[in-house]
Image 1 (cartoon, helix red, strand yellow):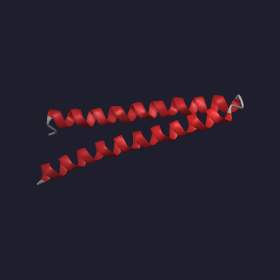
Image 2: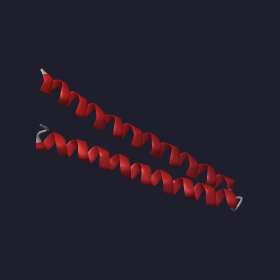
Image 3: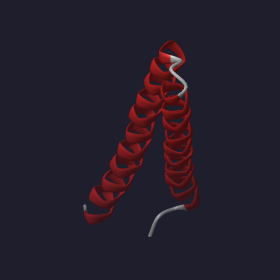
Image 4: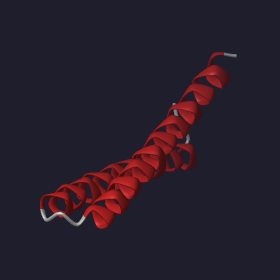
Length: 77
């Protein structure tokens, strides 16, 4: 069974991941809106922000998975 502090850490990492994915989606929408308005510089910037947020989201999710796997390995030993 996960101890409370480890469980909280995993939940916080998953929450951070979800927040980054949400920001990525909004930035992608802003990129598309700016592209439609022929504001290509802003569109490119929002697309870049979206990409960075997606990478951060993936990193947080991977960290949460690693924490959980580490805990399982320790529990089996």
